[in-house]
Length: 136
Picture 1 (cartoon, rainbow, N blue to C red):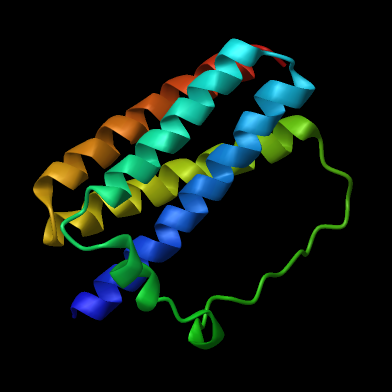
Picture 2: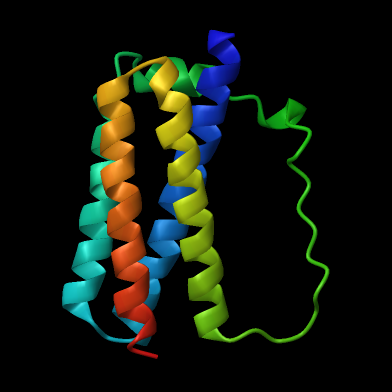
């Protein structure tokens, strides 16, 4: 069971971190808002610290990664229409919030204190999303 839990944590940590980074780049390069971009960066680093403070090493988490055997790995881009930067931002924020929620729930099996850190990060993301959307 522990291996499956670590796989879920690894996949959602990566998903959340990537989504936050995309959103950070929107704040930085598209909106030109250094302060807001800095808050995204701080949140992304808090996510990394939450993983690194886990009672299971990051190395052990990554060791359970199995990209080749991931049944959900195939990505499908069905909509060929042009999307707006705001759409990219929103979809990445939603992806990050969902992934952090998964981390919050699944980490309870390993560390309640880590779960609380993920919850705090999730609420920070909700606020960042709201503030950023006002800038478009």
